Length: 197
Picture 1 (cartoon, rainbow, N blue to C red):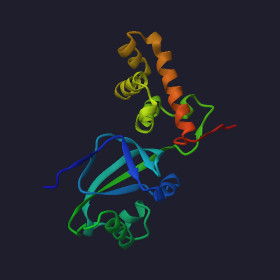
Picture 2 (cartoon, rainbow, N blue to C red; picture 1 turned 45 degrees about the horizontal axis):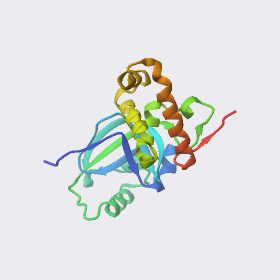
Picture 3 (cartoon, rainbow, N blue to C red; picture 1 turned 120 degrees about the horizontal axis):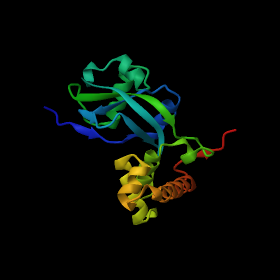
Picture 4 (cartoon, helix red, strand yellow; picture 1 turned 135 degrees about the vertical axis):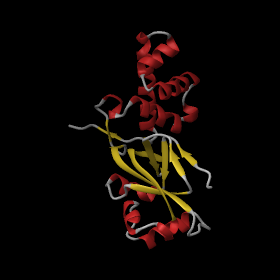
């Protein structure tokens, strides 16, 4: 039996596939082995940046030789042959009888041009925390890191304020940390924003 690998909140793709994801031509990714997503909503990263938030709609497994043209089209390729050629480049030594995982997803939110007039640029505060923790590393002080990490666990500004500060009245501290993190993400070019009319 093949040992399963788990997929967390972040799904990495090559930068060359970002446009196809954002334009809806790529609605699946195929990974070597048995991959089990832990969550339905994940952030896709490509080209060194977060590019989209997606909802995983279906996960299934096939051997390389069982892949079809339909599987290939969902992954942004024209044919099974084209897909298998790419898989052999990405996974040297892959064999026809190896298991692959097909992860089908639906685009929930594009992260390539966020609305700066919206609170948190239209992102969920938890997603801001996850992106900041992934990309800002040393630029976050210990206090900000602790707040953002707790927010990823509670998924609630209110709950994090209560857990860390003992009062919901301290929510403003968490909001300030989120705003500073967003500014840093914009300044570094990790996120892009524009003001919508």
